[in-house]
Image (cartoon, rainbow, N blue to C red):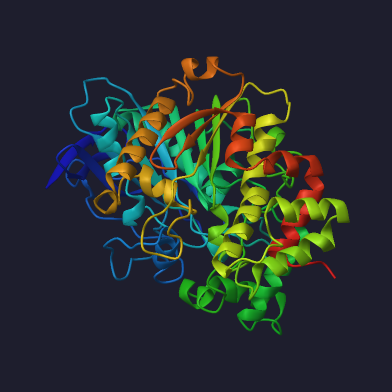
Amino acid sequence: MSSTLDHPTLGPLRGLSFPSNTQYRGLPYAHFNGRFKKASLYHGPISSTEEPYDATQWGPLCAQIPNGIKFDFALSGVELPHDAEYKQNEEEGLNVVITVPKKLKPGEKLPVIVWIHGGYWVVGGNSWPQYDLQNLVDLSVKQEKPVIGVAFNYRLGILGLLASKELNNTGNYGLKDQVLGFQWLQRHIEGFGGDPNDITAFGESAGAMLLSALLQLSTPLFTRALVMSGSATLRPSKGEHQQEALYNDVIQALDLKKKSSEERRNKLNELSPDDVISKLPPLVHVGPSIEPGFLDDVVTLNTIAEKTRPSWCDELVIGDCFHDASCFKTRVLNHPNNAEYFIDCIKSTLAPTTASAVIKAYDLSSPHPAGKSLVDCVELLTDLRWYLPILHTFYDDIKSSTKVSRYHFHQSNNFDSQWKGLAAHLFDITLLLQNHRHLLSDEEIMLGEDMALRFFRFAYGEGFISQNEQTVREKVVVVWGPNGQTKILGDEEYDESMRKGRGKLLRSLGWETCENLANALQFGIKK
C-alpha cells in the first residue's frame, strides 16, 4: 500500500505505507558527476504534480562485489531473508531511505537519526534487511520518543576512495557523498516532519570509521554522534605513498601496467564497475586519504581526542564490543597457532619486561585449546584497535565543548555460529536495530529495547548518561551485558572488573608503542 506526501521542496512523493510508519525509498540526494569525481547536491524538486516520485522501491546499491551481504551475515552469524541479487548502479546509487512515523502532529519536528552502514568500506547498502530502520523507528514510537530514520548509500571500494597523482584526483568520494547527504537533510528533512537542527548520526565498524572521519571536518553536519566499534585510528587516512601503492596494485590487477598514463586514465574511466571490481581482491584495503582542506592529518591514538571532538558536535558517544576483533578472523587471526604468532610479535615489538607483562595479562603463554587461544588473541587485538582509542578520546584533556560518553558491549552472541558465546563484532547492532527480533531470546530482546531507549533519549538531547547516573561517580560508563543486564560502572571499576585492568596496562605503555604493536599483529613484523 502506498501513500503520497506533498513535499514542499522535493514535490509529491509516493511512499510505502506500513501500519505505523511510511518509508520513502530510493530518493536521489546527489548527482553523480563521473567516476573519481565529487558528486553535487540534488536540490530538487524530483517530481511534479502530474507524476509523483515513486519512492516505494529500493534504490540501487553503489557498485560493489556481488553478494557482499554474505560477508556481513557471517559477522553476525545468521542470515535474514534477502534478495538473491541486489541491483547496483554507479550513477544512481547515491540514494537515501527515509522512515517516518505516522500520525505526526501538524508542524511537529522530530529528531532525526542517520545510520551509516559498515562493510569494510567495500560493501553495504540501505536496502539490506539487517540495516532497515523500520523496526527501530517503530520502537521509538512505542517508547514515546519518536524519531525519523535516515540511511544513505555512499560510494565504496576503489570507485569511492581511490586517489592518485596520475588520476589527478583526491579520493574520499564516499566520505564526500555522506557530507552531501547531511547537507541534503538540512535542506529537505523538515518536509518529512524532521528537525534539520536536531540530527544524530550513528555508524558501526566502517560506518563508525567514516563517522570518525566526518568529525574531523570544520563543517557542522549533525548535532550528536554515536560511534560504534570503529574510529579514525582503525583505518588511518592514507598518505601519498600509500595512495600510490594502492593505485599501482590496481593498475597491475587490471593489466594496465604497460599502458601510458593517458591510456590508463581512459581505461579506468571506461571499464564497467564489474570489470574493475571483479579483478581486485574482494576486501581490497581502501580507506580515506589525506587531503588538505578536507582531511588534513593522520589521526593517531595521541591525536584522536583533539581531531574527533569538534565544537559543533554537542555530544559524542563511543563504544566497543568486548570481542570486536572477531571481524579480523579471516585477515589476521587465521594463523595455525595464533598465540605463538602473537607472542612473537609482542617480543619483537616490546621491551622484555613489558612483553612479559602483556603476554601474562592476556594469558597467551599458557597451553590452551585452539578456541581459547583464539579468544585471548581476539581480546588483545580488540583492546589495541578498539578499546584504546575509546580511552584516549575519553581521557585526553583537550579544549572542546563536546561532551564524551562511552559504552561497552558484553552480551554474548548465541546464534549457532563460530562466534557463539562471544560479544562479537556487530552483535550490538543486531540487538539495537531490532531486525533479528524473531531470532532473539527474551533476554536479548529486553536488552535491545533498553539500548534503543537510551539511544532515543540521546537523540532527544537528554544525554546518553542521565544526571542521576552521573552523580554517583565523576566518570561512569554504560555496560550492556552480559546476561541481558545494563550496568553503570565507574571507569576504573569497569577496566578492573570487566577488562582485567588491561586498559590501564596498555595506556602505561604509551600510545606509540601500542600502535606499533597493533600494526605488528595486524600486518606482520617489520623486517
